[in-house]
Each structure stands twice: as C-alpha cells, then as structure tokens.
Amino acid sequence: MSFHAYKAYSLRIHTEIACPEMLPDTDPDGVADVTIRVLPPRREPISESGKLEYDVQPGQFRLAIPEVAEYRVEAGERITVEPAEAADEGKVRLFLLGSTMGALLYQRGLFPLHGSAVETPWGAMIFVGAQGAGKSTLAAEFHRLGYRLLSDDVCAVQQIAEGLQILPALAQFRLCPDAYERIGTPSDSHFNVDKFVVPMGEGYRTEPLPLCAIHILSDQEEEQPAFSVLRGFDRIQRLMENLYRPQYLQGQQTATEQMRLAGQIAQHATLVSVTRRRDVTALEGLVRFLEAQWTERFPLISQEEQK
Image 1 (cartoon, rainbow, N blue to C red):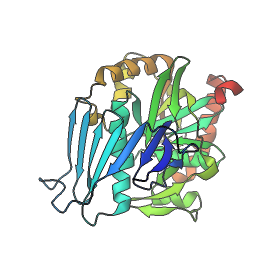
Image 2 (image 1 turned 180 degrees about the vertical axis):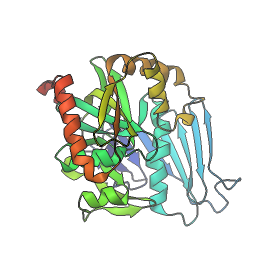
Image 3 (image 1 turned 135 degrees about the vertical axis):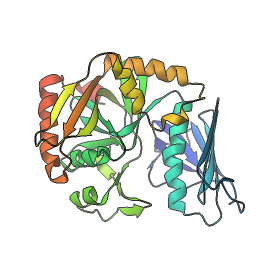
Image 4 (image 1 turned 90 degrees about the vertical axis):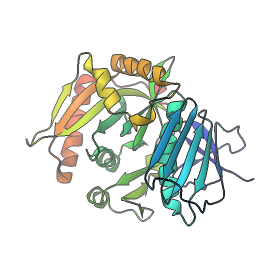
C-alpha cells in the first residue's frame, strides 16, 4: 500500500489520503511517527444517532461525523478513517486534520491550544479566544505584513529541556470572507465547508520556535486596544479554557500531564489579555500596537533560538 509522506507538528506522517494542507516530508523514507489508514467507504450510517458522536478511552479515541467519516485514533500513532459512501473529500480531510489530529496530540502528551501562532523576533506569539474571536484573522494580518505563520486553529505547545516551544502545524489559514478579501484573495486558495483555505507557501515557518506569550482576545467598544499582562492563580484556568476541543481530554491517559504542562506554561510564558474593537479595517493598527508592546516588554530571541 502506497503512502503520502508529510510533516506536521514535527511528526512524520504517512497517510493513504493525499493531504495538500500538510507540507511534504523532505525525507519520505524516514520512519513514520503517525500512520493514517483508510478503510473502504461504509454504506451504513456513520452515526447511529444521526448526530456527531465521540468516545474517549485511555489510548483510544473515536469520532463519528454523520455523512462524513468515522475516525479512530490509537496510542498517538495510528489513525483509521472510514469514510461515508459518497462523502466529500474536503470534509473528510477537514475533520481528520482538525478534531482527529487534536485527539492525537492529546494522546502524545502535547498541549493543544485553540488558536493561531506567528513567528516574531521575540519568539512565538499565540492568539486564543472564544469561537469567532478573530484569531485566524489577526494571524493573517501579521502574515500580510511580513510575518511567518506557525499554526492556525491548533497550536501544539511542547516542553523540552530548553523550555517551551510551538510546533509548526498546517501551512494554511482558514479565513472568513472579510479577512480573506483583505489579504487579496490568492489564486491558490479555495473554499472548504465554511471558510476560505489559503496555503502559506514561503510564508510558513517549518521549525519549532520558543514560546514567548499567549494573547487572549476579546472585544471592546473603545477605539484604542488594551494590553494587560495576567497574573495570579487563575492563569492555569484561562489556559484550560482555551484548549482545543477540551472535551477530548477527559478520559485520556495524559490528562495529568496536561495539567502539569498548564502549570509550566503559566509559570514560564506570559499570558496577556488583549481587548480591541472588532473591525478588519483596524487590524494593521492592532498589529503595530502589539509590536510596540512586545518591543517594550520582551527581549529579542537570539539567532540560535530562531533556528
């Protein structure tokens, strides 16, 4: 059986499904960290209830999306996809690379935040917030102004001996129409399910980067944005509130490890509340405001750290 070889989250992924959302592995003959197999299409209903179903057990995860596919994740190493008959391939990949990959990251003991991350001279900056808070839109504005993307939608934080780092994810944005129009509607983009998918190309960082700060976005009526460093014991709670699909953590063998990592992130990374007026025409001003805050508060990382 032939496989496509990709890299995402610093993992070698061999998959029977072609996934242009991931970068090709420069060493396709390397040993796979994750293998994705595809079963023949199922004629029977994917979900008996007709609704989304999921089940979490130690080392096991099952997700059933009606009329799309059933996904099973085992031990953070194997994913099995059983598509529905006549399922849309874009939807099958959407839930594979989103919810299913999030469950795999939990099984591997990583800390997946629901947000977007960009590369800066101060390190990796993450933007999190409630659904629709504008995380991808802000990251896309940074990209438009010359910054490279690290991750969109799922930001995997990993602890290594040197500290905390963000792993590069998928080399794409998923944008709402107003943000998509702002970046110039690239010719290599396409519409998938509910958003425009925009490949990053050279505007994407392929190596991990030290984590500097996590920004929690929220709206306000005032014209000028506000930047406030969070302190106190509730920082761990704020991190847990911004996990990617936190319901997929319950029942995982790594739940204790997630709490330990939350404590490490709260201790060693800066958590910030950013309130701003939601307006795409004010995005460049928000980027310049954040750059000024970072210049004032954070040291630049060394060239060695940037590699």
